[in-house]
Length: 427
Image (cartoon, rainbow, N blue to C red; front, side):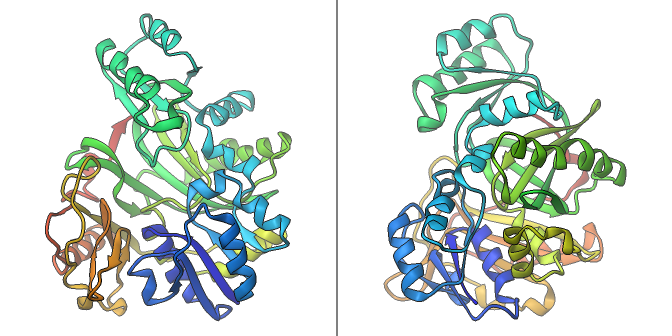
């Protein structure tokens, strides 16, 4: 099969790496890709929202399957456009991708179908939001309704903070049109867990759990980012928690979408918080997480193409998802200053030090080739370093050992990914 992957980050590199292992794969293309993906795929200079150009390319190259890695094209309806042209594509249609595209929609869906989540109110008028805040308890959470690259969430501890947050989201439009609507949500505390899942329109099959580290600095301090690291499985995700989530969250969400006439095929990312009153949904994503994919896919035993085809064909019940017993830890190397301001274009050194037989993997997030053909930094998140081990201690040791082998000017990373003392947080 000829496969096209749409996207350019660490998630898409991890997907390409897994797709390359399938005996069904003949050739991989990636649009637009990055310098790391170029080692295993032919990268093509087409933007992720250039649907017509992508369709022309798919037809020209006779591509058998397109895998959409990123949220924006899914929310923008790329699957509908491809399917209208008779092309085979993996991901939810536009009316289902709204599960991620609108937090107001997803919160209202959970409320309607009794799926556990934080209490909330939705606002389109900043003055109404400000008035509501006068009589609320703090801390409180403000969320931009639309896509905001994982950064449209503000935790406000005082009324003054919340007023500033409303201005930032709804008036100054720091997150663009994502702030046209805003959700004010109850603040919850507890360990966070991410659970990725495959969905075929009828049933959901979950992958192994993971735990994300969103804050930029050690000890869960600093600004929210797209993710500074991850580990899998999540230490707090017990069998009892899984049984509850399977019954009241995972399948209930798929059934709710179907009942709304929004049949869901693709990936659902369940962002959960394990509160004192039970697991609750923080958010949904309509695709693999980043860097969740970088710890989950290395532990996955299945042929990913077989699983994707089963989702598309509505026969996911015939697949037995399997994962290794090992622990995976991912440390993200960023450009100093991320997620605010940072410089790009620095030479990446040490990439040739890695051998996959040692179960250490480098997934490129923000890299490109310069005019000399060298790999240089090209984003805030530059590389994801993932390592496996028999337990969390060994996986963490392997990951940080691998981090030392890589270098670039202004390199920055968290030193505490996988430490037990920062596993509980509030949002």
